[in-house]
Amino acid sequence: MDIATLIGLVVGCGLVLSAIMMGAGLTAFFHVPSLMITVGGTFAAALVSFPLSKVLGLVSVVKKTMLHKSGSMEEEIRRITGFAQIARRDGLLALEDRLEGLNEPLLHKGIQLVIDGTAPEVLRSILMIEVNSMYDRHAEGKSILEQMGASAPAFGMIGTLIGLVAMLKNLTDPSSIGAGMAVALLTTFYGALMANLVFLPLAGKLDNRHKEEAMMKELLIEGIVSIQSGDNPRTIEEKLKAFVPPSLRHAFEDEEKEAA
Image (tube, rainbow, N blue to C red; front, side, top):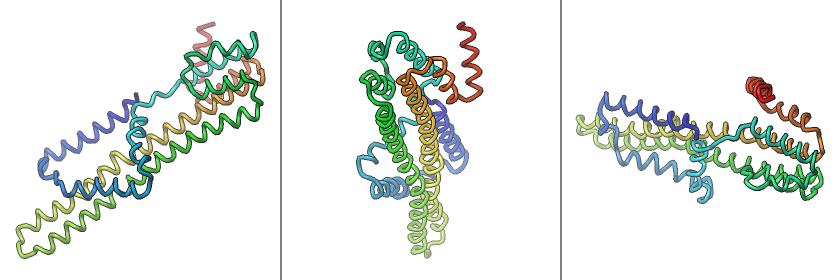
């Protein structure tokens, strides 16, 4: 679980609520019609832009930003190197016993294709189709969040205009102008808060998740193809280390020295 996302949301909401409580009070910032315009309008715009199934699937997309557990590149390099050693010593068929309990779908599928004797160009093509499908899913989820981040402030402004029109129609009572203006501005507040604390940050986090996972998939594909080619395990390990940042690469090498 990425606790940073949860901490950010809790701290952001907490700071806003604290500022409200120290100022005009919570009741002054709670207005049901304003919430209906901003929240309802934002989701309505998303429904117009995207299929219903994609919008309803937004919950799983948001869950991925918080509950996503990224794999360790170092762990995958060790696993692939181990597979390469087995394949070099006992043959590719010996890898079949290692497939059980393998919880990385792409690696499982790739090793199974290697065991089945799939041609190298076909193997890479099949694995890249899997990865490209993942890219499309991530891009769609990000685009929904970005669209909602753009719509929320717009509907906040629409709500403000509606409130101003209602206020200007009642100028005969000057005492109600201040209260009417406050209500009119609430929709802008709701829209800006939703966009800048929820939708746009979550879209950015999803983009970061996508980049991390894309790098991991590229590492796995390179390792699988290298195993099929019969490359030396040490050569495969050095090749895959190129995917690891230099700072982590040094730590990885230190662990190898300790193990030796």
